[in-house]
Amino acid sequence: MAGEGKNGEGKSGAAGVDPERLWLRPTESRRGRKPSFSREAITAAAVALADAEGLEAVTMRRVAAEVGAGVMSLYSYAPDKETLLELMVDHVSGELTVTEPPSGDWRTDLKAIAHLQRAHMLRHPWLPAALSTRRTPGPNTLAFLEHALAVLRPTGLDGAAKLEVSAQLTAFVAGHVAHEIAQAAVSQSPDRAAAEARYLAAVAADGRHPELAEALASPGRPLAPEATFTRFLGRLVDGLDTD
Image 1: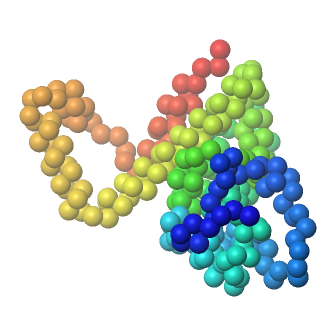
Image 2 (image 1 turned 180 degrees about the vertical axis):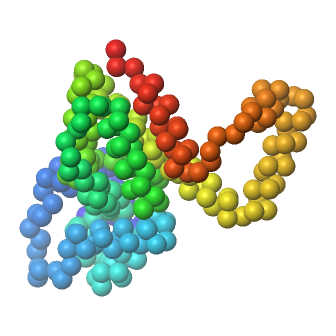
Image 3 (image 1 turned 120 degrees about the vertical axis):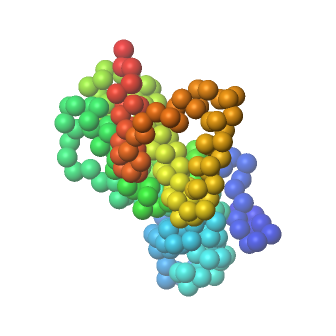
């Protein structure tokens, strides 16, 4: 069992999360009486906490309290927060269900995947941060990856390149959503938004940034979040080289 941190949080070992133990042997026998909770319940409680209060609110103590268990009893299911994050990411990935097979138009299908991921991450605003470090794909994540790879089959790319494109797309969506969430927070503060506009106007007028001044003076693009995402996504996907 993992060691205890000063706040009662388990610590990951030097080797990190063991994917075989986590995903291939999730129900290894446990001694003692059968618990009144499950790994699914623990993960769902952690997701609910993260959705409501952010990722920093997810501690083993908080999750234990949510499921009505002692914190030590959770460690046989999730020995540390890193493992719990793996479980959380794969748990919510189960929402990314695709029922229709690829259409054969891989660019259109890839954009549909990205829009699905964006909506998914906006429902779970903690996801971009959770995905910023390498995660071991669990069964739900692998099912969605399988669809993405099938979408890319018409490109003729080799397997490694298809994996790279899939990872690049997810990274783009995560980065964009993180920025979108941050910008939404700024928009809730009119004074800050006005101050930023005045600052950029002053910089553009100082004569030392002619390229920026020209860019700011050009006609603007639609700023609605959906339109902005679609525009950026188009530049990424339409510019992919499959040769």
